[in-house]
Structures are given as C-alpha cells and as structure tokens.
Image (cartoon, rainbow, N blue to C red; front, top):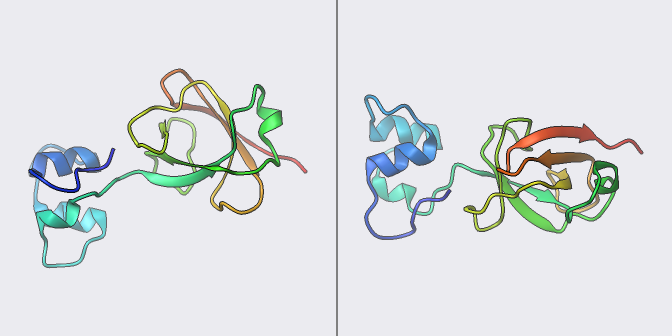
Length: 134
C-alpha cells in the first residue's frame, strides 16, 4: 500500500510492503527484490508500492455485462502477474481502499475494451476470473 514519499522509513516498513519474511531482513535483499540497482539505499523505497496497476471498467451487476466495455479506471492488485487472479486483493486508486463486491472488466491496456472479468468478495479478494467471448 505504498510507502511514504518522505519522513521516517524503516527496514520493517519496507519488509511489510514487500511481503518479505521477517527473519534476517537485509536492505540488499529487499533492494534486489524491488529491482533497485546498487548501491542499496533506504531512500530508494520512498513512494515504493508492491502493487501492480491494471485497467478496469465501471462496476457491472453481472459478470457478462463487464465484457467488451470501456476501461476507465486504474486499479491495483497485490499479485505477481499483470492482472489479478483468484486470491489476489484489489485496491482502488488510492491504494488503501479495497474494491469490494463487484464485477468489472479488466485489461493490461487502457485502450480498447475488457477481455476478462473479475469478481471480488466484500473484502476485495478476487473470487473469480472469467474470459470474455466475442
């Protein structure tokens, strides 16, 4: 959920953002995980987020209605892929509020229309991903 852009920043804050194990925390290992180049600096992590952006449509009452409609929102998920999968958590653009109980189209590109639909539960966890059929 994005580290602060200024002020105090601890190795524990970075470890939590990365979802790294709490044993044997090292700045070098966490910098490598985040993809930063040497020399390793805590300041590299200001504003860092471990979330992945993707593009979504507006909320739809049924999954089938979320196919082939315009993608107008940037949302974030905590998974490792380009798009969320079942079990990932989806966040709104402020990266703190969960996207709860919805059906939305999604894509890796903001141009065009959705080619998949995701559904979340009340906690913003993806419960289903469906392919759109044209």
